Image: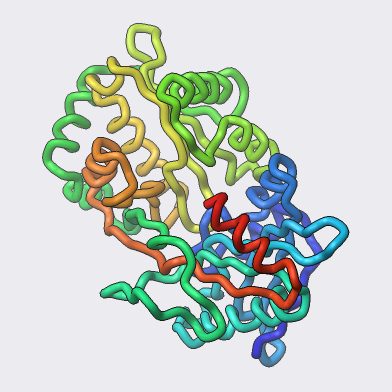
Length: 336
């Protein structure tokens, strides 16, 4: 079994530490954990896996401890992470899961829930889970990845026909495009995004409060970037891009009817992809593309980018030895 150590360091140091780990997502970055702690009352724990004296993986867990009685919830979302130098095989992944179970469920008595960052089986298994765990919830996270090691010509050729045609039209229209990571431009995006989700009664975990809090914590090279399109002096669309490790991800968007007709979403996203490539990022995640859960119009829009779809393994769970562990599981299942 692997040993877990809990290194000392701030949020940015943690993000730098896991920058080259396999399958890193924003949810395992230190600044995201700190934001969830500030806004939602989580406690953050970050650990590394040690085998034969070497670090082989890492994880960030969000903790909710039951007051007075002890026990609680340990939630590892899109982890644990394996180092690039170590093949992310099922065997290695299961060793990390076993170490997490030993620490959180067996030693501390927590209800442990994990959304793994490994690909789902093909075809997906309906009744199997790693030893000592049970399946929990529905299918895992689904999205698509664009390989930024391709040339710009290859990336453009991969765009679906209608998407590329709309992009061509938007480029000819001469909309004013700008980017912002702070100041009035960034505030303009947040305000438009707030109005957009309020006007359509959209429920999302990417709230304006999360965006603003997270932005104050990110290092300069990893700041969220707002891309804004103005037509005739009016803001018609905006998108928000996250950066972490070797990846960039489409995080949020707002748009108007005029922006959709003009193809503002296409030109903003295309500009963001090329910028991520120019920065040396290796991949671009479209930020969620599930054929069952993503609204059809958004799914078709993201599909037009020509990325490679993926789905992660289903969430798993294990009960701790604490007497209230089953109650915690019941409350988590109701919340999700």
